[in-house]
Image (cartoon, rainbow, N blue to C red):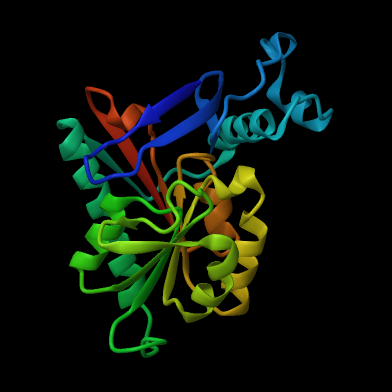
Length: 249
């Protein structure tokens, strides 16, 4: 599945490629750029657990989507589910508010002083204008990085986007919270990002479009908040549900 999206005139234009693995539920993985290889028809109708155990997937997108499907069957329920049923613009704005609300929740739970300046600093890895703007409106000091050359150097939501390859390590050290795109699961950058967060004791939130059912796993392994976003279906007409997992303390 491939789609090009711009949810708001101020937003980046992004081409997503996505693999969906479906049984009673569904799992999803995605990335940016050109399309994925054709799916393997021999996997259809097979036990997903055996596919993973026998390493029968063709590429990492297949593996992540199938693992996400299995996760959805064995994970604990989300701590909160929010149904958005509005216009495209209304759902886009409501999603950004959810991110700002959850960021505020995490930051209010921190007793330490801000690491730099007078305001809490939030690093967003995987820049989108709506979320950046919503965080700025809460009075936060917001930084953004991305790996896409089409976005690096642009200003989205009032924040200049830096190259994640050069800036992530420094900004993670300075951040009071890091919001990390779920695409980092499939592009291979998540282990490094989570390692940096652990080293610097930086709370984390994952925006899970890819790996939408990983909330239980992530929060059991130290992530503070996971927001499961059903995009691209969120942006289609009709209701869509955003699920939130919060780390149990």
